[in-house]
Length: 341
Ligand SMILES: [Zn+2]
Ligand SMILES: [Zn+2]
Image 1 (tube, helix red, strand yellow):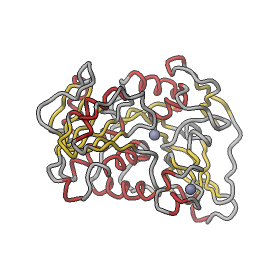
Image 2 (image 1 turned 90 degrees about the vertical axis):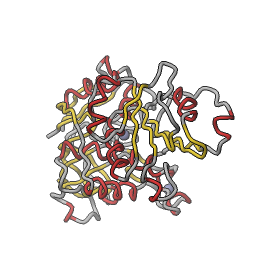
Image 3 (image 1 turned 90 degrees about the horizontal axis):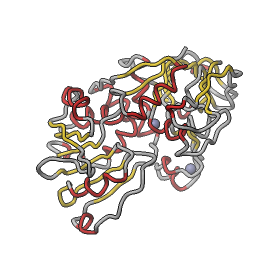
Image 4 (image 1 turned 45 degrees about the vertical axis):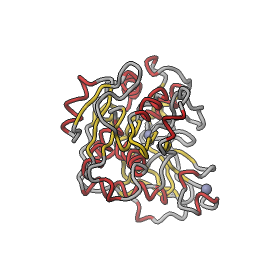
């Protein structure tokens, strides 16, 4: 199979991924093998390729938003999986026995495996995944449009879940989204459908305004040079998608008393000192670590009901370096997706 492999970590602009012809992977016990048709490109792939996260699989193939057809099953896997269209996402396997797995918080499992990081991912023509961890995808989404749902969508969904204590609070919730990339362009639609009044904050107001308004923003605001989401009035919740810790204190400062600040990134630069007065009004800060399978299933069902529209910029597999470089420079509109097979 053809795969884009990371043999050295370096800036995406130097094209560190190389196209190799590898043996097809064989599915292990309980696994399915997926003939990949599309794979989303996520900021986490950039962190793996550029060295913010260590390389942990061999071959090191990024990609954790896989859409494809099951073409083989391993020992003990139900053969009726063959031919099904499935999605595979970042959380690839958990131990199933630890305290977190037992409490329905498998996203915190310390022995978890991750697609495109600890195991070879979907920037390839074939990928293996445990059958218990793949998702059946709603029909309304073509392959390329379905791919960004699998990380950008699911992680955004989990981030939103921390913005309120009860579903009733969504109606009229004043929500700010900091950064308007792949995850935010899906989350805004989910929040809007639930009744939130969403303001998008970005440094790229000119290029992002039109899309943000079309997808439901009531307003698009500047992220000022000192990282402050600019605008009048308090916000009830802010979700930060930008990987910049510098936005944390000024975002807290925009919150009403009791407001929530949710940090959605897997990797973020350090936060500057936090003045206690910003926390004192019972404001809460919450990070998001991975997702549970329940998050994935619930999100896919809600995305199909709304229905969510994903905007994608499509690249061939061999242009994965270009897709990552464009993501790094912030010039992707919506989500980048590789067309494969
Ligand atoms: Zn566990
Ligand atoms: Zn991701």
